[in-house]
Length: 108
Image (cartoon, rainbow, N blue to C red; front, side, top):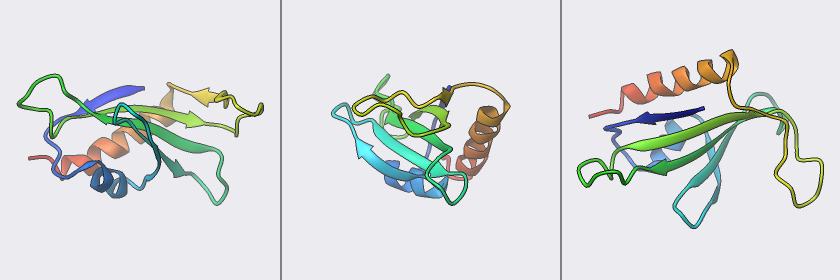
């Protein structure tokens, strides 16, 4: 599930912390790979690819694009990223709503 939140105060690290995610990787295109555990184990877990929007000069510093899904289990085959992910549904929508609610307090 993709969604956009505009006018967020703070940088990507602050955004991740405020919604309970841990950054685990950064890609070359300034996309941050971050996760939030659901329980004591590593899986299942919520997984977000987060990047800043550069659609316009006026919003390039405070608009974030979220790509959210749920990793059900660890990839089975070495070197692959297949993980039985869920990209839509009530659980994903609830997590997106939770994030939006928390970040609404930090918008300008």
